[in-house]
Structure formats: C-alpha cells, structure tokens
Image (cartoon, helix red, strand yellow):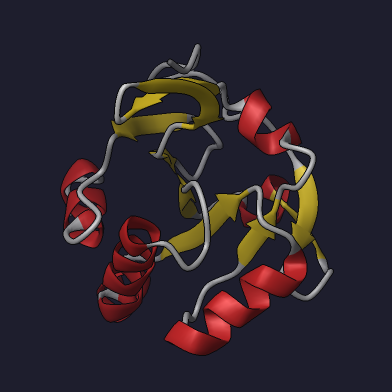
Length: 154
C-alpha cells in the first residue's frame, strides 16, 4: 500500500496531539521513533495494540524508542482513549489525514465482503537520522511492542 520503503527519508509532519499541542517528527531527531498508524480509538484491535505498547512501554523507553500513535480521530476522542487505558504516549489527531496520506496508508480495504476506503494499520520505524528503518505492515496487535524491538534489532 505505502509508497515508502526502507531507507527512505520519513515524511516530515507537524500535527496536533490529544492536548492540542503541536507535535513534529523533527522534534524527535536523534531518537528512534515507532510511528504507529491505527484505524480508530476504542475499537478492539486498536485497543489491544495500544495496551500492548503501554504494557511494554518501559522496555521501549529503555531502548530509547519514542512511541507516537496516529489515527483520524479528533483530540477529544484521543484524550478519552488515553484516559481510559492509561496510555503513556501521545496520539496524533490526524483528522484531515495529512500525515496518513503522506505515509501512503489510506486506501481501499475489504471487510465482510464490502469494499471501503480506510486506514491500513501500519507502523513505521524511524531511525535517529530520520530514515525509515523498517515498516511493519499489519502488525500483531497483541504483540506489537515485541515486533518493534525485534525490527530495531534490540
């Protein structure tokens, strides 16, 4: 789905987090970033994924990996999701789908025989230099932190 590949420069962005604060990829230059895109707050798969990252957040931090979640949900919904599940990382409210489209993960999906446009669950692992280290397409929602650590060779 995405046009991006390992080694490409990660598309720069500035968007708002759950608190309405501006957040830019450039804020994390010099750090490893797990930029994970997910379809919708409060849904089973997305909740499993976020909670897996929460439960392994200490291990990710130990390896200096910044976790940033992105979905088309708005700031209010993100804050409710964070509060309900005690998520320790920011969620980007990409309501205009600018970041999602820059990373090329919005497109045709199929579910129960129906086709529709939607977000393809994908995680981009970004190196300290701002390059795409790896791409996890269709991550395992209940073992996502482990996938991230493995792909970063940690």
